[in-house]
Amino acid sequence: MTRTSVIAAHTRAGVRTLTLNRPDRLNAANDELLLALTAELRAADADSAVRVVVITGAGRGFCAGQDLGDVSGRGMTFTEHLNATYNPLIRTIRGLGKPVITAVNGVAAGAGASLALSGDIRLWAQSASLIEAFSNIALVPDSGSTWFLPRLVGYHRAFEMMALAERVRADDALRLGLCEQVYPDNTFAQDVQAYAERLAARPAHALNLTKQALNAAMTGTLDQALDEEARLQQLAGDHWEHEEGVSAFKEKRPAQFMRDVNSPDH
Ligand code: LHQ
Image (cartoon, rainbow, N blue to C red; front, side, top):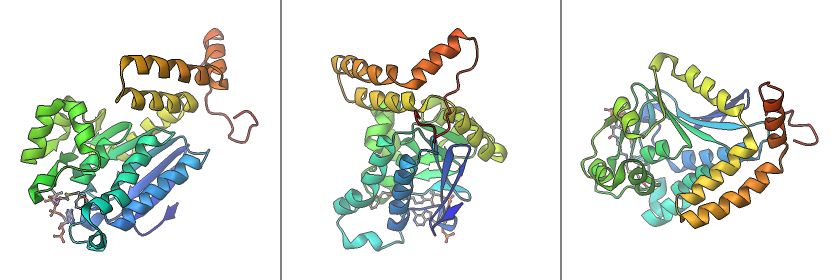
């Protein structure tokens, strides 16, 4: 377990869990938290013992967005602040070569809602909720909300959620496609760990390429996607994971994709 004042971190069974740790502020983000989280994510990306990253919150909130009482960003313009803190964080999550799970344990508001949506997999506790709270303080949705949300719910629902800033609860979030699973509050941490370990047992190299392919396809044409699939499939097909998957199929046994990270062909 390592701990800065704002992020608690531990690794178990290939799963690196990063916990936003300002519970008395519902984990509202100050610059220190945003920069520390981004640094932790980059470190997890570089650590071959880490196969999946989980971002979650301490206490009853996930992240209440920008800390409205914190003035540390105010030496900068809004644009400079976003470019220095929130935008590198969201880009790091989307560009990470490993699956990122956002484990939304409680309320996610404003930029915290954007963070909740930014994961490759979004797991929610039953009592979690999401509020596109920006318009409550007459701001524009940022940190990727304008990109994530319409792709999930369409333009019109996205606009309604942003304009009215109403709370979306877990059952509606599941129905709308804002999360993949909803778990009971009292088993949430264990359920997230079990899900993450299931993901960690999958072929890490192939999932990295899959993430790259999907991210590219989200902004490209069919022609571009077909070309990118052909390029990335070569990288996947040349990797030992593919050989292992095919051998396991032929031998009628489960594939073993978790190799000792110190083995020469890892
Ligand atoms: C907070 C916060 C908070 C400080 C709860 N800050 N203390 C903006 C500006 C600049 C650059 C970049 O980007 C952005 C993007 C944004 O994120 S804008 C949106 C900022 N976030 C919000 O507007 C959300 C504000 N919070 C709320 O609306 C409510 O707190 C929610 C709906 C999240 C939760 O409501 P409750 O469950 O009723 O909790 P609460 O309001 O009682 O909050 C608990 C404590 O946390 C409380 O402190 P206290 O000392 O009274 O116990 C709040 O003041 C504090 N807190 N959010 N963002």
